[in-house]
Each structure stands twice: as C-alpha cells, then as structure tokens.
Image 1 (cartoon, rainbow, N blue to C red):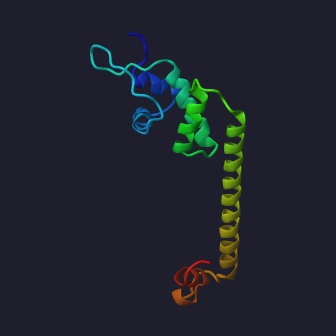
Image 2: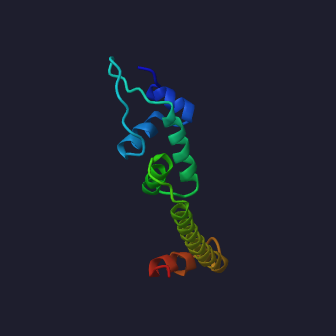
Image 3: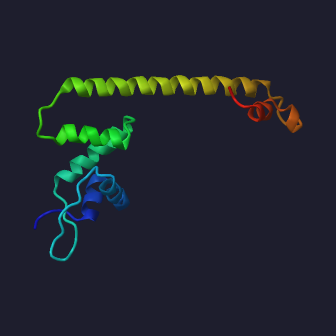
Length: 137
C-alpha cells in the first residue's frame, strides 16, 4: 500500500500532527485506510486538501464553511460558480460588519483613553473603569 504517514503529511503540509487528527475528527479529511502494521496511510492528495483548508482559514472561513468548499472543490457533481461567488460575497459582508464593529470598539476605547487622567486617580473616578462597571454601549 503506497501513501504517506500522518507525520509525512504534517511535514509536507507544514502543520502539526494534531491538526491532521483534528481535521479527521471534524470530517474535513477522510480517515485513511491502515496498512498491515496498523498505520494510517494517506493519499498524496490530502496535502492539497490541508493546504486548501489553511488558505481558506486565512481568508476567514470557518471549518464548517470550509467543509462545504471542499465538497465543491473535490466533488464530482456539477460545479456552480455562482454559488461560490455568492458564498464569498456573503463572507465579505460578514468581514465588513466585523470591521465596523471593531472600529466602533476602537472609537469607544480611544474616547475613554482620552478622558483618562492617568495615574493617581481612584478607581471610582477612572472613566475606563466607570464605563466597564456601567456596561459598554
């Protein structure tokens, strides 16, 4: 039986062995057959799948989303590029919302830092601590 061991796959894909185990448990990569000695023997293609997963994670896709992308990438059924387009466009909207939320948080913190007189102020007079105690909105 020709193939790669888990450690060979990890090295080739530049990931930790535990990452491969995790991807197997999550169903992102198939559990490979075992050789006569009981070792899992992975096909060469699993390296490309792992690299695909890592690149998709870098773009902000969740593992569940990546699972769907892998099905579309590796599937034999007819490929519908408009579905992938819509999927990616939705991800852009999600990222834009996160950026707006982060900018709102940054603006709030900048205002609090600007109001903070620095050291020597009692806790009950610190604008940052007061806002945190009241709740941030």
